[in-house]
Image (cartoon, rainbow, N blue to C red; front, side, top):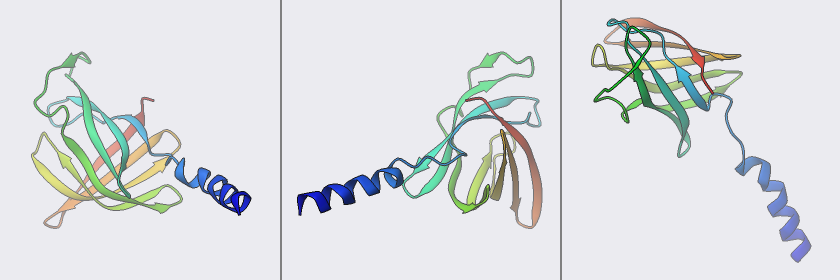
Length: 129
């Protein structure tokens, strides 16, 4: 019986240790003010979320921002084959929340979202780490 339980526990290890390819830190495209940020994407329960961990000005230097530490992505779910949907993305420069989709292709993360029928291309984010 102990061997069966041990074998069952070992079989579950890959599932428990699973990390989605989208997890990591991403550099956003410049916003309307030409600022950009680093978003740390991670699991939030069974969903995917992203938090602004650093902000940068138009000169590329790190700046202080009241938005650091705030959720930028939440409630996103993996659909498979690099597609993500069902979540929201907040755009701090416009203070708007978009119903969004993401597409992971290599080290680029395409972001698209809509609010009240108006859709916006959030550009392609690039992997930092």
